[in-house]
Length: 86
Figure: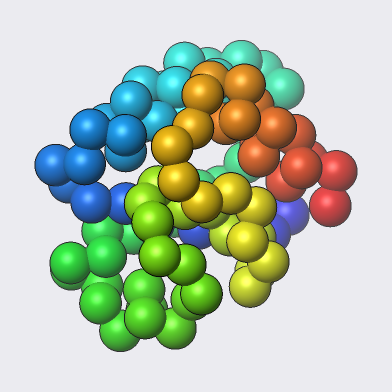
């Protein structure tokens, strides 16, 4: 399975909300096999700059953008389901 890249900022309120959604969803057996790399764009600037996004939170599978911007719990679920399908 490919690694899911999650670009975020430490103090971003939308990222903090997504962190909670991820914690909740990843406790479900269905999603436990998904490997997520959490990337703080201020700490890994070079990597972040190599991806095409403007807003955080942003999710990529390989170089394919799955989502960018404000997310609901359902949006996060869709991202995780997309990872499982590929």
